[in-house]
Length: 567
Image 1: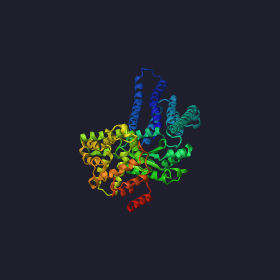
Image 2 (image 1 turned 180 degrees about the vertical axis):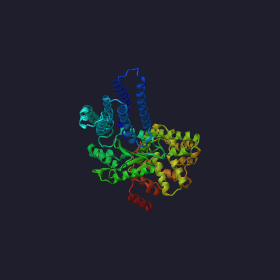
Image 3 (image 1 turned 90 degrees about the vertical axis):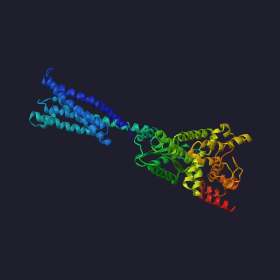
Image 4 (image 1 turned 30 degrees about the horizontal axis):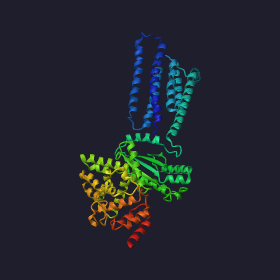
């Protein structure tokens, strides 16, 4: 994945062509010198020039196709390129040595060029091997031209050039290997997080851009965003040094869980990222769940002081190109899924999904523009009402779980998802100061707040696709005993899905911080639901809702349900 070696080779390759041109001129000069030729002997010049030009064009053609990636293996491509660059000056020299009729000692010097290139590209070992090969060529050439074989005499005659070849091969190869090792060290420093020794944020962004180019429906790219739950509490309790030790331990566990095709990186603070090429959503969720369980089951020093009694992580999963068209969008989607996991119960894995994107798949024409407008409206509401950020997502989650608990058909659950997610869209009409007012509301202000149900249903009416949700949104604040608003409906006359949202909405409101009070505990909120069962809430639905709250232990849920039934 490191691009530095490729950049280095490209730089060397661009300079090798100049070296090869120089090689041709050196050889031509050697020929002219030994023949005593002048510029008048044009035919000889043309003959050798054409020969070298053909060699050069052949080399250029092979290099062009190899650089275009005609072979699927990058390693094989690189190896063949290096061999071509070494072979050209070697072939040109041998052409002159063995075809030209005269004994030309100067041409032997050109054999230094492939040795130098081999050392620069392939290291000391290959360069020394090529030096040995060239030595054999020189000795054989002398035998071929002189006619008598005397090994000692051949060595003595060519001692300087053979020594230079070995020295250049060793030196250029050693310098090249040292440079590569040092560059590798610098690259590792630049790409690695100092604390956890995982890849850092910079490396993550670079590799995502590279991997995203090859991502498609057949080869998806999945990303897991991991956050340590309540890490601030751990830091405050044990100190930053222990917090750093925890980050290192969790980083190691994440790294050991990543398949060879992917990698783990520290995103920042207590957040980590796992990148999984060629893994679809289902496999990525399974991978995230594996990581979550490993950390959940491991006993960390000092974890007994955590709110959950142990160290846990939450994970958000997103996949491209299904839900993301850019690397930045993929990170954003995974982060949104992570936020959803943490806002619901922590110590869980959430796959990114979007109600709006589901609606857009079936919407037509103007409906798409209106749905996009709704998404913008909800973002504005979240920005205006800082105390209920993420409220719609949680209400949707609780409502869908309750619907599943009472075995509603899938079509009803889908309708409920849309209605629960959009139930507060009418708040766009309410002033920011009123939404965040810490004092008790006066009668006029309370009446304004009550209108959000009516305003929301009116806004949704514009989209035929959502027509069935208008009544649910309109009546989601009706009380079971008829004391709610806007129409004072009671009992079974309130739509079932609106009664479900009434419970989920109230529970989330009680367990969230509000301008006028702090959040209740889960236990108190569920006791309040039980107390108001039959007045505000459908008494048949409340026991089912108690069973689906994930924050409570099974023992407590059962106990609370028992108290409710026999009270």
